[in-house]
Image (cartoon, rainbow, N blue to C red):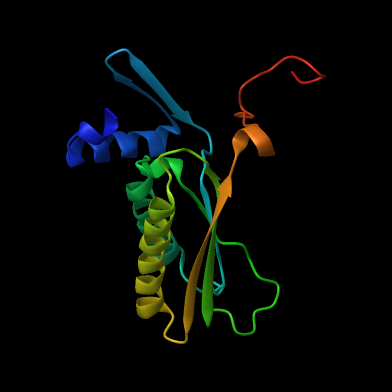
Length: 168
């Protein structure tokens, strides 16, 4: 794609713009790409203790976005990362499980690409565990495919004003 032919510096600048503006229109010849809102895929990391600092979590988000975007050829801003709070605090940090949801099925997303994605995300989580969670004995990544045509998919920016069905 045109995105892949850009220099690393240019991609980084555009990715930063997309992240802060939460929307980006990129023009490559006659092709127009619009990115915005909370695009897919979504990485949900379970097992992070609640006492991990905000700075470490923000750094992990960036690492995971970089790790996931490279094998998929996506912008880092197209990767959402969440750390749900676990109601049971006992044993948190002993294992990290990452579930990758909303990975649209596409012909170019072969088994090898999905495995590369899992391995890349695993390395980022493993590095985080080594530095921040010495008690961690297991890191696991599960890649879930999603067929947007067969399984249903809808997205909208709730800040945009839409009229219809009682919504203003």
